[in-house]
Image 1 (tube, protein in one colour):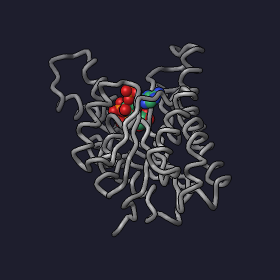
Image 2 (spheres, rainbow, N blue to C red):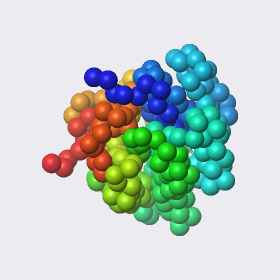
Image 3 (cartoon, rainbow, N blue to C red):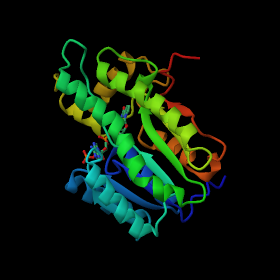
Length: 263
Ligand code: NDP
């Protein structure tokens, strides 16, 4: 199946690690030109080196904090100049989860988490919308979590914020139709940068990586018996964002190894 991504322009926020990096790699492999951003310049440079090998000359990598409106607008201006004033696909992926219960989440942490989840969507969508409107069949794909449907008490503010984001995306799918499609993926657990950091911070340092991740998959009752790899959600993102998904909008696709309990 031809996804129709050859020569298309895509932006992947948080493209310097994990799922965003895997998505950028797949998009480049499909012949798209890809702009990525992240906050850490070293991580971005390492990602750039990897991605340039896939499709030389088809990558733009810029440092940008998606919570800083000025920086996001500057990133959009650079993409516009680089891509000739249009954008076919915006992948809003940047972010991370917060592990805390209601009892140990401060008001400041609540505000920080709500800001991260909402404004990592709002600011890039606002900044890139004029470029998306200039493309023939544009799309937005948001990386969200199954927590939006299936909250976990140990990730209370992330779960609540994720549910709100799903609600926002549904409104946008209607408001932006028929010009821009808006879809999301709902992740379970994916072995990426944030889980690597949690592994490194484990209390029992005698546990190997394999033992720690296997125990995690068991504890979380993942029917497929393991965490996902970054490539697995990336393939879903690339499909939903491609012209091949031309009749899909306002949808959410679970990529969770079967963790979802809803029918
Ligand atoms: P990684 O930590 O591997 O990647 C996160 C990426 O986002 C990095 O490139 C990071 O770069 C970037 N980023 C984070 N905050 C910002 C910011 N404010 N502005 C710009 N870039 C930012 O994690 P994942 O690949 O797992 O995460 C991708 C998305 O998937 C996140 O939104 C995460 O919350 C979500 N998710 C992941 C799950 C999982 O199990 N892995 C489960 C559910 C949701 P830098 O730090 O340099 O800015």
